[in-house]
Length: 337
Image 1 (tube, rainbow, N blue to C red):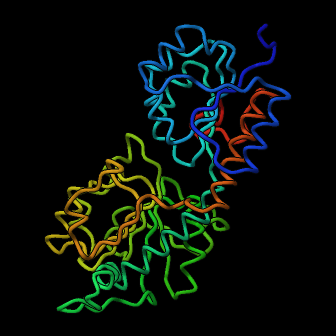
Image 2 (image 1 turned 180 degrees about the horizontal axis):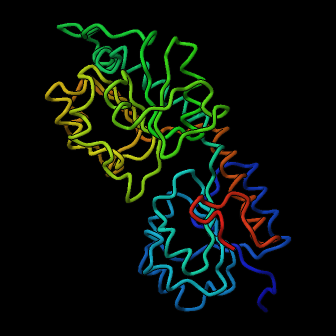
């Protein structure tokens, strides 16, 4: 006999015990199910078969793309009519095409603030490490070659440097707070200027001025059609040749091949990268460059942050089923009924 409860679909895994308990507690208001599919083609067939009928809300992880692929117009047209809420476990949701979701009445949420502190910590690590030129001596020390021969070039102190933040949302504002005790001055560019309270003393500048005057450029903006390759060859040409570029957003907001060329030509001094265009693949020119500090997308890779993200996302699923609304809808759907 089938359950009369609405269904909550788990796309991916929930890895931390407090969050697993939260998910299991949803069984009082929903039937908890998982797909049997392991690839997009089979997932579409599973939807078409009626096996997922009754699903009202889904919890989606980044890794579940292996099962569903992009949530695009093609996939969305096969979802059961009952499916009204898609809860994405992450601040970024570039795997989801929001416009066709909106057109189909599918509400989308993300996890906008739980990621801020850990991602800003990662950006600060990359900024200090890239300024000081630590990538090369870390590698030579592990090869038992001390500082290398010749030794790594001298790095630079953070004090007195100008940090330019492109996209000063929650992560950017958190980085500002963490960077200022190092004697760093902060300026930013957004589509719209922040209130004085949110800006916290950071100077608002044009996009062009940000590129021309920043000693360190931090990319902290979402990936979409407008921001893809927002930093490429023309933008590198405007920057100081001593600039350090930090990216903890999404790899494709910067043209990776153009960055490799700019580093090779001395138009960019160094970079600290946590994200890449074709993850988990990294451009060989970045791997080979001793002035680039690399991390394999570790921005939120802490027990505390991952647990908080999972619990936040489950709270969105709970709100969807109980109240018919999401706690943190994506900005594009802020006015969606």
